[in-house]
Length: 357
Ligand code: TLP
Image 1 (tube, rainbow, N blue to C red):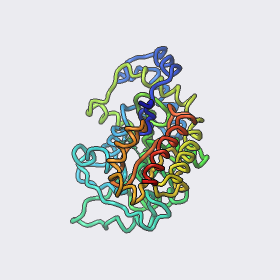
Image 2 (cartoon, rainbow, N blue to C red; image 1 turned 60 degrees about the vertical axis):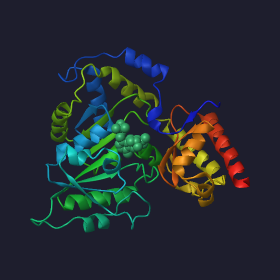
Image 3 (cartoon, rainbow, N blue to C red; image 1 turned 135 degrees about the horizontal axis):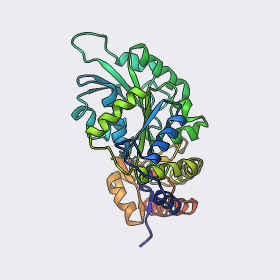
Image 4 (tube, rainbow, N blue to C red; image 1 turned 90 degrees about the horizontal axis):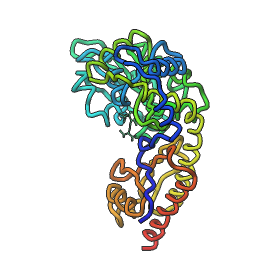
């Protein structure tokens, strides 16, 4: 049996020896009492990177997004978002069940690429003030956008949609689980990406390779409200410096290497696009996520993407079926050039068999 190559997600990375050492050596206190020096250092550092007043260390991206909603809406409010945004698609409906908010989708049909929203599309999704309608309070955007293929928001569209939200008195939250990848792909500062957004959640446990943790950043008042809600949700951690130390280590050592993940994703995409199983344009790959659509004949011969996920697993390539037609492959810290090439070779051998059969 081949050693599995795990391309399911960048969340699967294990802490490196150096990261474990940093965690072991961390100074800790009690973060609920606000006396954990390592958590404080991480929060101050991340707030400065995004040029925001304050930051809050939380267990997960899902909690960071939920706190952004709880801190900026009241029950009954409406959230505007993309129909495949993580907040809507993958967070167990927390915006509704915990936040009491409804969601209205902003269409991306007029956008140059999926996942990004034009200012005009937002304006037409916002209903006028009227006693019949909920109050549109929060726009959430996702950068990079996961289900749209890890795409990066063009800077001009980001500025325009945020301005349109503000014209209508709305706040803007960026789900920046992979904002580090967006900054790397565009070659811009994190603070530039955060300038027009009120809050931003950034995950440490994806491309940066930490075992746990995300950070929510924003103005002091909003982050203070989020701190209260974090306690309410049971997310107040005690000697959390052990986890924050991993984050500090990652900022020092794993930020600059994201370009390697992007280059490997492009190389994998090029190899997969050559393979008869798939039918997609590798030029669509902008960061570390490869969404590879299956060719129709591959679905006829080998079943839908869920069946192909199992077939690939049987040859030691782990990925996720994101829909009946599409597989997702994610490059990350634990996979070097050799692993990516080996994955492409394994999949291609299957393609030759499927193609010749
Ligand atoms: N996404 C996971 C799965 O939930 C799909 C993945 O493997 O990509 N925002 C975005 C854009 C995300 O992609 C994720 C994780 C989250 C938020 C949630 O982060 P966690 O898993 O820390 O709650």
